[in-house]
Length: 177
Image 1 (cartoon, one colour):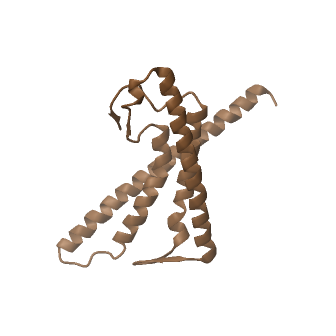
Image 2: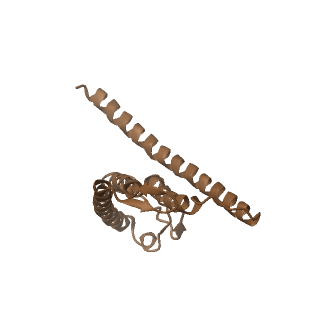
Image 3: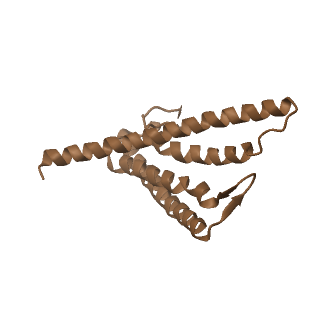
């Protein structure tokens, strides 16, 4: 294969992967908006003296997990999470780079362990056909399914920092959001 063609394929895969992360973050945002609407509707109906929908609490709890797991990889990629640079800002750039690589390796290892564990839990719940019984019955594996996806994608993102040139750290002291 021609090297230029290989490069184009890699760029196309990277672009598709970036669109996947953005798409998952958009889905998480839509879910967040839906939860807000459900809660406002639930409280309004309750305050007007009517019976609110029975599924609001369960759907909110499920949605919060999905929002977290679907948006986390995009937040890692865009440095959208909260992090504190007190120590890294006080050390020379070379030491900061080494410290960053250590942090990325720990984050990657943690993501891989959590991916494996959550994938196992999801698979066991699927095989055993365990149901989550609340205001409606739902297969428990559906609840856990977002976790291996999120942890796998976070692992990929931390791997990109570990093996790539990008860094999460600015070298400026403070709390970044």
